Length: 106
Image 1: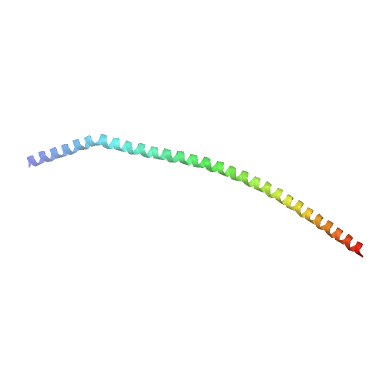
Image 2 (image 1 turned 90 degrees about the vertical axis):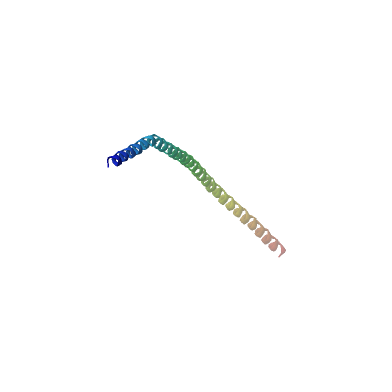
């Protein structure tokens, strides 16, 4: 019985020694995993910042383009009005000339 106890103690001691030998390796591996994840987190954060800045610039450009389009629409409406006015004046002149020719022919 005494021999079994001694062997059990020897096995426990071997187990504890193996555990103590593995602890620095496990700690180093855990630190490596931690730094890898921190690096990935940093890369993701930087990508988010870059995309956020690009989004802001794009939105500013979009707003500027909308303002330009609104201004161009106003100019187009004014030009269309002027064109319609000119056409009406031309039609009036044609009608007036035709009326004068009609009256002259009578």
